[in-house]
Length: 334
Image 1 (spheres, helix red, strand yellow):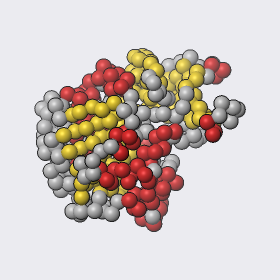
Image 2: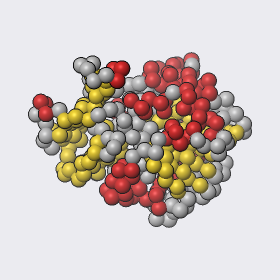
Image 3: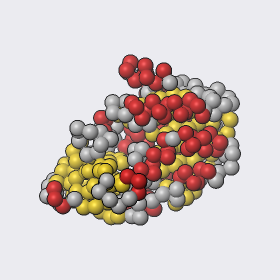
Image 4: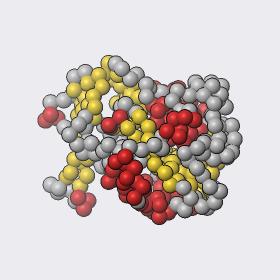
């Protein structure tokens, strides 16, 4: 979960909601009347609704039992509330990042799809993922010797440790080194062929996060990976963002000379209930993402304090690459 950096936040009082926020992006960087709304999500009495031009014409709402935290970091608004059906919910700049009930479907898949596709991963980099969930899952792999994470917003880390300790437990692993800063800059400074795997837990391609979906960023990722190394990055929803996915696939096929595949999973509280992943490998030992070679047992865990896997298994790993016909036609044509 990388930081949402979509611009300044302003309270929108005219809607009559007690806590409604709108992020604005100004064309050409001018402070004129050309401001365009990036998102507008609200808490009306008893309910949180997520609204954005990234998913126009629809919104998903959760009933709010109790507001637990509201704060503003240097980068974004941070909110945690207790929902009636999905447990505690983490919201950044009006966008749901995770809920206690369904976070496993995202955290486990974005981590184990790449790490179970290569033998004996030793060095892993996580970009974003400040909640610690990806760290929790990476630490299940006993072969891993070093886990670096670069998260831009320290408040996300601190809030996650306080309100989501079973997710932020990943920070307790002694192999983890936390770097607070910009992930793009961090990656550019990484020596070539440093990592076996890089996991990019990014926000949507709005504002500065757009960089994480473009060719120069993928080129930096490729340079930081060893031959046959793998990357897994959040890659939007096939129901909402096929144009974005087309661009991601086209860029990755130009940059990565090994395998390039798209996978998906279900996360009920994400827009459309579906989220995808781009999985790529660099030139070197062949990587067959569709058939895991490094199985992880659902009842086994490197850190005995962590709970067993809730979502991922070897069967769902392979099934994640089976695409609906409309998406398969587009992705295969790139």
